[in-house]
Length: 165
Ligand SMILES: [Zn+2]
Image (cartoon, rainbow, N blue to C red; front, side, top):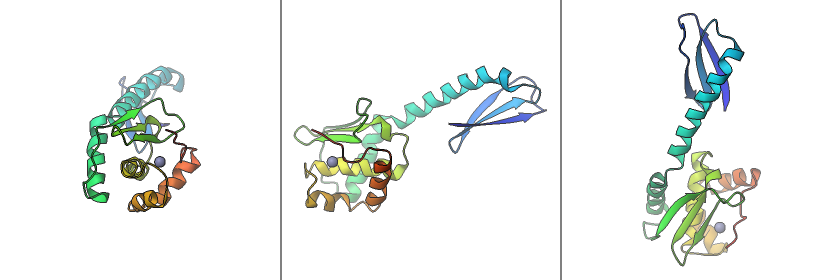
């Protein structure tokens, strides 16, 4: 997270932080040095990151999004037991066990752009129908218009198609 410090003469003692487009804006009194500010920034940054983590790793939101995407690209015909975030998949973007209807999405995806997250969900949903990466599988996945772009993104960060089951 980038940090931008905004000093104001109107501020006397209070320090505030807010996130603006991925940058942490720290509002500080004019007379406070970087060194004095540092411990406050560390604390505020930690607090904001924890809040973000909580909201992006919310299983309920993930479940809701999966239903929206299932309705849009699979006519709402898919059934699964659970879709959850997991923190133990550092190389894979996700996994799907069609037999048990269990989908896991890597926490590494959580901070990525929406179109990438949606792609990963669509990819794992498609495995409920087609367990392998055959032509039929890609036909299903490519119904999602940003598939190619998202795969490029994942490849660039080393996460595409390293699923093993
Ligand atoms: Zn796959």
